[in-house]
Length: 289
Image (cartoon, rainbow, N blue to C red; front, side, top):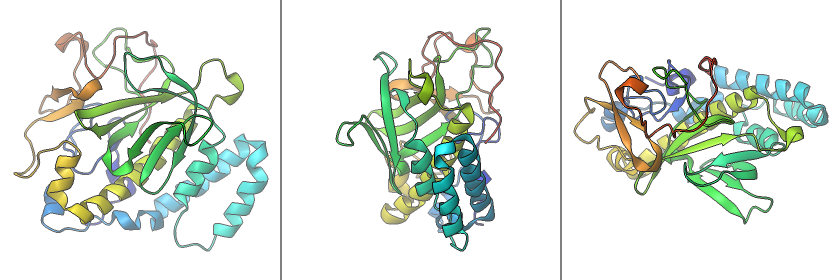
């Protein structure tokens, strides 16, 4: 059965989750992994997502919202809307790059290194790139099909301090050579005029998630389901795993109980997926995208 856009996102935290995963890397909630479906030849229909009414409507809504928030972009975006009214597919890549290029980002690529500031973000159909002023000065270049999850940061529910990195608005994991790698994205420090609203990052995470799901489908059709599962760090050749894992920094993976509850501070004071840094108290988890 073809998937709806919402099937790519965790019901608990709203993060995009790669269709092969049985647990959300962000919060640990159980997911309906689709590896077995793909392995037996089912078509998940992700190639047609840009024609799905939900995607078309949301791209239109994001376009209008951005036009209202950014007076400089009203004319150009209005012209783009008029030009695309009769198009069969939503231009999600074009829209994402249109509003991303007007923002500057701060990225935490490793927990121990200082964050990189004043970065630009660029997305293509199969790649996500973070670079400095010149495109040749790239600090991150990730295949979209390798993205395991992306969404708003989720607090550790069992922790009294609810710790996460201050300033992070979007957190993602992707398959690296040594295991899952965590990336944090937020507003740059000291650039008030270029700070983006939190809903900017919610829209960014949703758009990247849709494109990542589509890229993953293209990849497993190219190299096969089992090869792609290994590529993203999942040994799924013999069926679903009984225990999900929560991705951590530096390739570590922490087991998630079968019931789907996220690990708490009481179950381990040092969560590898949450660097022990200053956090924000009293904020509820972000609503699902």
